[in-house]
Image (tube, rainbow, N blue to C red):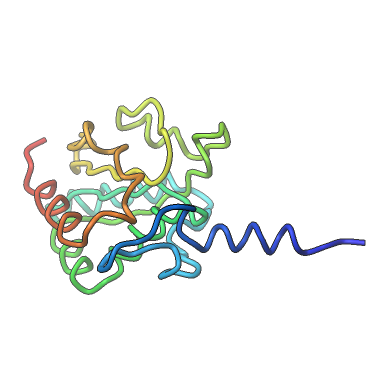
Length: 171
C-alpha cells in the first residue's frame, strides 16, 4: 500500500518559507509563487544562454542569468520579483533574461554547472545565483553572483538598485 503523506509533507515544505524564517512585509517568499515555471528543466540551456548572448550583442544589453530551482523559496522569490512590471521594464531595457535549473548543487545533485564554469564560477554553493554577463561573455559580478541565497528576504528596492547598478557597471 502506497501512502501519500510523505509526498504531501515534502511538497508543503517546498511551498513555504524555511522554518524560523518569515518573509518580511514587501518581500516575496515561496508562498507567493505556488509553482514558478522559471526554472523548468529545458532541453538545451547552453543554447538558450548562447542565444541570449547574441541578443545582448545585437541589442546593446547584458545577459541576466539566474541559476536556481523551483524547490528553492529564494529562487522562486527572485523569479517572482523579475516577473513584476517594475522589474520587467528594467530587464527589457538592460538585459536578456535566462533562467537555468541547477538542481541541488549544495548536495552534489547539481545540473548545468558547466554554464557557471563557462563564466568563471567553479562552484555554486546553493540557489539562486545571479550572473550578469556582458555580450562578450565577461562576468560583471563575480564577487556577488553566488550571494543571492537570501533573495526572499531582500527588499524590492535593494534588488532593483543592485540590478540597475550591474547594468551600468563596467566589465
